[in-house]
Image (tube, rainbow, N blue to C red):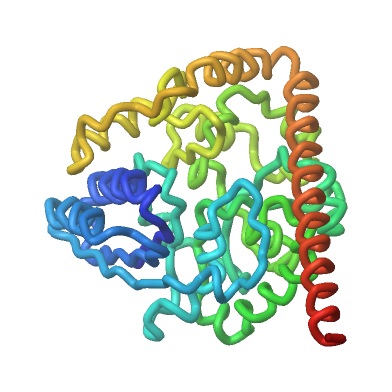
Length: 345
């Protein structure tokens, strides 16, 4: 099983926790290899990650990717670190002999063996992923996705790397991103969904269970995205009770003070098994976490309130992106005017 992460220094600790949980939950896996595409992990953090892997008799290979920002040019990744775009370069950076790879976000914890996931057939698709049914209508609009078409989360990806390379997905998805970049709120995830529609195999929610979905009713998710009805209710409920991969994709991140994430104990348990044991929680989020948890608790009974809050959030992101684009355009015009003046002189 070949597993890859992409990380900067800020997420090195969380990567180590995820890797530790994967090793612990998959000790019977004979061949388990780790690759970390580093967009700026410090030597000290690299050593801590190696030490954690070595405690399970595993090794980690670090692949530096320091020029990611330069490769992307003026791409606006909004509130997300540019490292998120590193997923798009896996076919180029990973060893040529790898033909299948499991990509994991750093903010995941693995609680079950992944052997069955690894052996899942992709049925001719480029990758397998878990559907994200609460995606915003605005995102569907600029991706031209109908309500009955699935939108997938990119936090856990089972990738046919051979097909990815043969179909030149990297160049095509980067070109697609350029076309939607001014509107793409979720960057590479949006680009993958737009370019590869119909070529993504739907995986069961247990392989990438977003902790927010603990509070949603199955019927609410189907109402938001009719395509989610292809996921049996029993599979969704089973994922709530016994997720294989927990994804801390919401604001209730267990490393923040005041977070009440129902799956947070798993992160804390594995943190204590790494060289980062004893790291204090990040302060300054207590009020935000209190309000966010209140919203979560109201979700089952009043899903409309959750949807309204999400709508306000996405509209805020859209305004901020538009303002940044306007500012960049203004700066560009000013620079151009200055060049013209110097040329006239």
